[in-house]
Structure formats: structure tokens, C-alpha cells
Amino acid sequence: METVNLTINGLKVSAPAGSTILEAAHAAGIRIPTLCYLKEINEIGACRMCVVEVKGARNLVAACVHPVSEGMEVYTNTPKLISSRKKTLQLLLSNHDKKCLSCVRSGNCELQQLCREYGVDDENYFAGESNHYELDDSAAHMIRDNNKCILCRRCVAVCEKVQGVGVIGTNNRGFATFIGSAFDMGLGETSCVSCGQCIAVCPTGALYEKDYTDKIIEAIADPEKYVVVQTAPSVRAALGEEFGYPMGTDVEGKMVAALRRIGFDRVFDTDWAADLTIMEEAHELLDRVQNGGKLPLITSCSPGWIKYCEHYFPDMTENLSSCKSPQQMFGAMVKTYFAEKQGIDPKNIVSVSVMPCTAKKFEIGRDHQNAAGVPDVDIAITTRELARLIRRCGIEFTALPEEGFDDPMGESTGAAVIFGATGGVMEAALRTAVETLTGEELANLEFTDVRGTKGIKEAEYQVAGMDIRVAVASGLGNARELLEQVKSGEKQYHFIEIMGCPGGCVNGGGQPQVSGDVRNFTDVRSIRASVLYRNDQAKVIRKSHENPAIKKLYEEYLGEPGSKKAHETLHTTYVK
Ligand code: HC1
View (cartoon, rainbow, N blue to C red):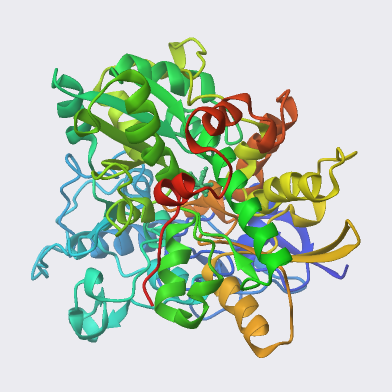
């Protein structure tokens, strides 16, 4: 690798040719502040927080986009730079509503942190005219508050470049510039897919999920209500970040203990329903392969992906698995199977889900998601909302013991927990489909070809004399690329897994926010996914069809996978 030699603050540094000053400084342990910069997503050098002095340059240069060169002399913390950055922050504050006390991001706002670091003691220094915007609460999952927007354009870039959706952009010019939809429509009126990736990258409180934590507190306080909670695979892999644990810490046991102390009547696991999904989806795959059904079969558990398919690939909705997502299958079974077993009227059950996903808030309101005649899931909250709820209830998370999920819907296998990482649903389905087709036990359960954070992965397996071709895509831009190849006939597969968020649910729009400073230099997706793979490996049972609680469910209630009752309760339809 060709390297160049330079100095940063007088230190001799060498960096790969083509690196930016920001990257070279980071490698040398020197942090340069950023606001708009997101590696490979938003590299526009617009916010001017990362300015540095380069000897011989006429102006300050933006370190995030300026490449290093041989013999360069860079200075990152001169009085001139500190003053420039402070002025930039004061200018941003001059058109910012500064309601930090009540802001959902207070304490982890990137703007607030920089103001503290740079000693911005007069937030009204450039006070004058400012813009005032109405909140946009038209979408099912989120609120847009342009009064807190700093025009960094991270949300615009992730929506357009990563997700290929592009429903937000910059409107107007100069002082009147604002981020919004075309013709300033409400987000809910556009083809936004509710993935929440814009929230995940927003440095301030301008974008946030609709918060339902108070509804949960009310339901728990209501003696008439039986309140049941389920937690998605990826929540345990990231919730700890909210309480100071290092990224990659599995907090499943403490999370369960916290939910019990909040007062839920039963603490269950979405993983149980992920195993159930595999039973139904593997059956559907084998049925379509053996009986000439529509192929490729495409997974249906990611509601952002489903909405994207309906908006952008309506001619492929027949390829979608008819299975409800694990969240919805869980809700359906709570209000039918569990309600019957416990003798509780489903109308009195409040079914709560904790998800790493904002699109789940939209999914609970879709048609045909009410197996018992009432919604399968009543309230979907994000990992961030759960952290808020834990704090609001005065629970000392770090001091909690480790506890286990309740029976009967808390028992799950290793196949279920890996659902949260891209390729995990595929791997789980293959473990079951291959054993069902061959009638033999797999010698190796790990389908490593479909693991990893690459945007598109492919594999081919010889199973019972058949070539089974599969593909996995995460992030909707990658999904589009893959589907266009399928539509053109360039690629042919039997089974495709698509997850709306890049890297899968571990990187969902409802997960704890990771500041640009960290995410630009950390493989967040792999670190969180490693929690799930470790969890899988530690399980005694690692195949969905061997889950005793799921076997019992079929024996006692559903009959066989794909049965009439299974179809009535666990399957759904799509909009063209
Ligand atoms: Fe997901 Fe799923 S894996 S969609 O990514 O199929 O949100 O974690 O809960 O429903 O199980 C999300 C995660 C989640 C569903 C499952």
C-alpha cells in the first residue's frame, strides 16, 4: 500500500495515499470534530466543523474531504480553528430552538456536545431573525422538527444514497433552506418506508420516533389490562449502549429483569415467534419449490422492506412470503393461543413489542394483522424508548440481576436470535429447510456464505439432488440492485432474504444512536451482530424445528405448518 508522510500538530504521521486528513488524524489518535460528515454516505464538507490549517493553503480546509499529500503540515487545534468552530456553532444556534431541557436528544446530541467542548457560553451571540416550522407528525412512526435541524443533510443522504428512497431533500435557498419532502408534503403522504435510518443518523433532536412509553405506563396501571411484552432479537444486542456498556454487550438477562420490574405481566421473546416464522416460511419455500409456486420466495419480516416492495416493486408482491413478521405472529399467538390457554379475553390483553425498528410502528396498523379480531400488537416501541422507560421507572439497569424469559413464549433457539443480523433469517430457514428436505441431520449448522455485512450476498447449495440458489440483501438500495437483476433475468434464485436496514435489524432505525464520531470509524453492524452469533452458539437447541415450545404449539393449537388455522392467524396479504 502506498503511503504518504505528513505532520499533524508537529507529529510525524504516515497514512495510506488517498486518505483524508480526518482519517489520517484519527489513525494518529487525534480527533477532529465533525457534524455533517458520514463516511461513504455524506462526504460534502459543508458544516465547517472539521476545518484545519494546512501550511501554504490560503483558507481553512475541511478535513473530512481534503486528501493528505506528501510533506503536508496540518494543524488541528490552533486558536484560529477553535474560534472558527465556535463561531460555526454560534451561527447554528442562531437559528435553532435550543429547547435542550425537554429535547429527546439532550445528553447525546452531537451539537450540544460540541457546544460544550468549544465553550459556547452565549448561545444567543448571533441572535436575530430565525425560522419557525410546524412539526411534521403525519407519518406513523416519526416526527420531524425542523426547528432543531442544522441542515447537515445526513438524513437526505442516507434516504437517497443508502436506501434509494429519496423522499426528503433540501427545499428553497439561502436562509429559507429547509429539509422536507417535495412540495413540502407531510412525510406520511410520501412513499417514505418508515425505516428510520434518517433518525439513526440525525445529530440533533430534529428527527425522532413517536414515543409511546406513557401509553405503556397507563396500560400497566390499569387493573383490567393484562400487559404482555415481547423483545426483538436485536434489542438485547444494543440496549446496553444506552446504559454505558461497551458496544457488543449482550444484556438479555438485565433487559428481562428490567421489563419485569416495569410491571409487565409476562415477559416474552420475539425469538419464539422467529422460530415459528421459520416453520411457516420454510414450509412455504418447500411448497413453492416442489409444487411450482412463485419464485424466488422473498422474506417478509422487515416492514420497511415490505412497504418499499409495495411502492417500488409492486409487480413482485406475489414473490413475498405470506408469513406475517415474527412481531405480528407473536402478537397473533398472544391474543389467540395464549389468551385461550390463560382464559383471558383478548380484548383485555395489551400486546407490547420492543423493536430495533421504527417501521414496526407502522406495521402494527397494517390490514390483516388482527388474528383475534383485535390488533395483534397494540404498541410497538423502539430500543431507545425502552431505555427511556427504564429510566423513567427509576430502574438501576446496571445493578439488575440476569433473569430469563417467561414460559411458554420465551423459549427459542439459536436460529431465531440470528434473525437480527443480515443473512440470519436465511441461515435459520436453511437449517430447517435442508433437514426437512434431506431427512438428515446437518453436520454443520453454520451457513457462513450468508453471514457478514456485505450489502448483497449469494450462495448455492446442493440439497437432496437440487441446486438451491439464495441471495441476501440489506439496505433498500442494495435490495433494488438485486431485484433489478432478478427482474431482468440476469440472476435467478429460489429464496431471497431482504432486510430494510443496512446490516439488518441490529442497525435498525430504532436502535441507540451512535454519534458520527464513533460510527465513522467503527463497524457498528458487525459488533452488534457478533452478540447474536455468540448467543446462537451458546444455545443448546439451534434449529427452529427443534424448539419444544413451538412443537407444542403445533400439537396443541395449529396442527401442521401451513395448516388452515396457521394461515388464518399467521399469514397476511399485501397491497399492489
Ligand atoms: Fe427484526 Fe424480526 S429480526 S424484523 O430484523 O424478523 O425489528 O431484531 O424483531 O418481527 O424476530 C426487527 C430484529 C425483529 C420481526 C424477528
